[in-house]
Image (cartoon, rainbow, N blue to C red; front, side, top):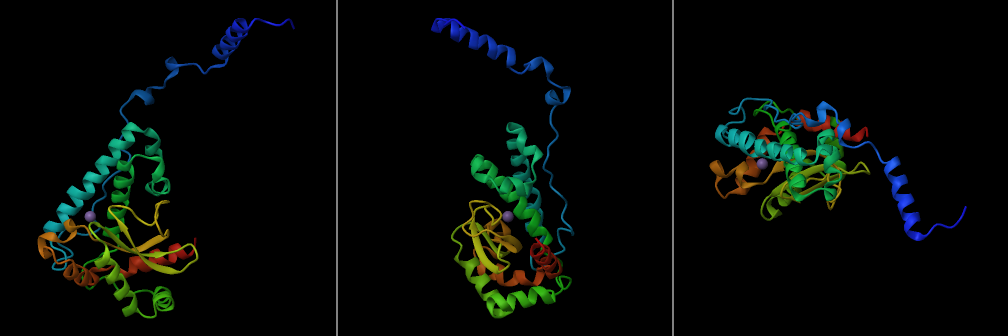
Length: 243
Ligand code: MN3
């Protein structure tokens, strides 16, 4: 083949690129132009707003669920409208790659997951049962006793500066650990200091307790154990252990 001048060679390459480029715009499906449905939803609480009284008052529960949790779901849907790939993902998939997304995705996917989890691990006083034999044995194995676990959890809750969460997690090695995360972060995030599967968690934001307890975080933490849903925590522990 005879040598082509450089300019001609470039023109030939450009023509080839046009021929092999995908067919543009016109081929869009109607679905791509219709408004996408909001992919993330706010589920109702598994009990009435006043069901955790007197430990957590109805007004706090209603504001917390409808306004705080609801706003995070709405904000995550707004992010998904900007980046439709998010709409195809589960919350857990998003939490595993938060560094790939803007901070609003980390904060609101975190908040959406954390609150949905939180509602399930609480139950009306007197109905939450006790830790299963397997969970009780693991708590004794990894903390020494139930009291020692609760003391460590309390210390972690009190030690979280500002807003955040305290968690009991199952680590990848099967061991239990108490960890705390800032803001709406959680141990499912790839950026978490200690990763694991949460089985119990307490919301340490002031919106979780301020109406009733004002600044007294310790009162909230100590009273909160009365509404822990140990049946659900145990179920989550056994599910995490099977992974
Ligand atoms: Mn909250």
